[in-house]
Amino acid sequence: MPKFIVYFAHWHEDFRLAELEALTLLEDVVVEYDRASYTSKSPFLIVEIESALQAAKLVRRGILVRSIVEYWGSGSTYDELFAEVRQKPEKWTEYKDSSFKFTVDGFGKSLSQEEKISTIESFSFLGFEGPIRMKNPSAEFLVCEEYGESSKPLSLEKPRWIWFGRVVGRGSRDLIDKFDVKKRKYLGNTTMDAELSLIMANQALARSGSLVYDPFVGTGSFLMTCSHFGACSMGSDIDGRQIRGTAGFRRGVDGINANLKQYQLQDRVLDTVVFDVCHNPWRDDALFDAIVTDPPYGVRAGAKRLGRKNGTIPERSLKVVDGKESHKRTDYYPPTIPYEMSDVVNDLLEFAAEKLVVGGRLVYWLPTVANEYEPEDIPAHPALRLVANSEQPFGGWSRRLITMQKVALIDADQRMSEQDSLARDPAHKNFRDRYFSKFKRGLEDNSVID
View 1 (cartoon, rainbow, N blue to C red):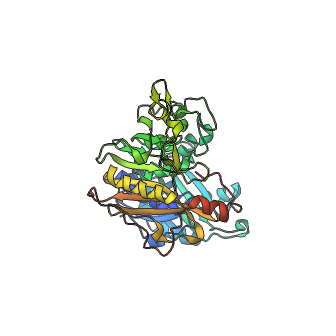
View 2: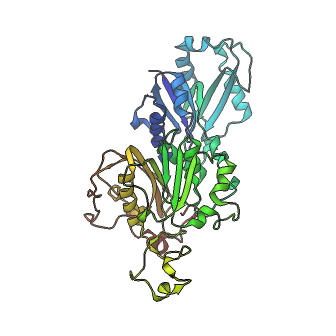
View 3: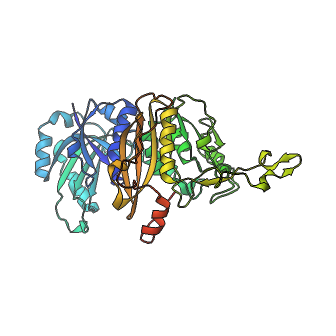
C-alpha cells in the first residue's frame, strides 16, 4: 500500500496513537504501521493506507493530527531526499501544469524566510510550470526539517531528518479554537479544556446515530463536543446548580443551555437531569453507545452522593410544615456525604458494564499519585476491555484518560473484580487527602483539577 506521513501536533504526545486508532474505527480506514517506530519525541509517523482519499478521510476529524502527507521522500540530507524523489518521476510529472504551493516547516527550529525560499528553490528540478497559488492550489507540498527536541534548538545547524510529500488532508485542530472555553457564554471551575474534550469525543467514537451520556455532566463540555460530531447526548449531575447556571464563573446565562444555543446544538443534546448516579432512574438495560465523563476528584469540586453520615433522619427533618414532614416536601434537598475517588470509579465501571451496549465505550479521567502508580491500579471489570491509557503529567500527580470497551453481556450478579489483592492501595485511592498532604505545594498548574 502507498506510504503516508502523519504529521502530529507536538502536544499531548501520549494521546496521539490512541486517537489515531480511534479514527481508524470511526472512518473505517485500514491503516498499517510499525508501532515500534513511533516516538513521542517526533511528530512524524509513517503509515500505509490504500489511497490518498482514504488517508484524507482518516484524519478529517483528528484533533492531534495537523495533516497527512503522501510520502515522496526523506533523508538525513537534501541530497538523499532528492535522490529518492527522482526515483519516481511519475508522481511529480502528474502535477507539472497544476497550480501549486510549497510549505516549509521546521520542527525544533524556527526557519527564516530566506531559508524557506532557498529550500523551495532547491526543488526546481520537479519542473512544475503551473501557477503558484497560496490559496486553494491544486496541489500543496510540504517540506519539514526535523531538528528534534532540544533545549537550544537554534544552535543546531543541520536537520536530523528531512521529510517531503504532497499534503492530502488535514485534521480538525480549528475546532480547538471554536470550542475554546474562554469564548463560551457559560463555564465553571470544572469546565474541561476544549482540546481534551474533543479528543475524548473521538476516543468515545461519538458519531451520528450514537447516544452518549455523561453522569457527572457539570457544565456540559462533553455534551457539546460529542454532539458536534453528530451524536445525541445527555447528562446528569447530583448538583443541578452547574446545569442551571446558578453556579460557575459566568452566572445568570441559562447554564448549559446558553452554550448549546451558542453552538446551535439544541437539537442534539436531548436533556440534562439532576440525580445521584448511584440511585439513577435508568431502566435495567443497555442504553448508551458511550459514556464520557470527568468524575469529581474531591479537590476543587467535592465528590458527593446521597446519604447521611449516621444513616438516620434528624428530628428537624421530621418536623411537619404545611401538613408535610420536611423530608417529604417537593422542595426538599436530600443530604449528601463524601464520595471517595476509588468508590466513584468502581461504581462508574459497574454502571458502564450494565448500561453500555456491547461494543460501547467508557472514556473517563483517573487521577493518580505519580510516584505510586502501577499499571495494575487501573480498575478492571470482566465485561470491559482496556483500550487506551494515556497520561497527562502534572509533576507530583497525573491524570490518565482511560478508554474501555464493553466486550460482553454480564449477569446481574456479576461484579467487577475487587482490588484488595493488591499489596497496597491503588494510586487513586483517597486521592483528595494525598493531593493536599503530599504534592499540592509543588503543583505548577492546578487549573486542571476537576
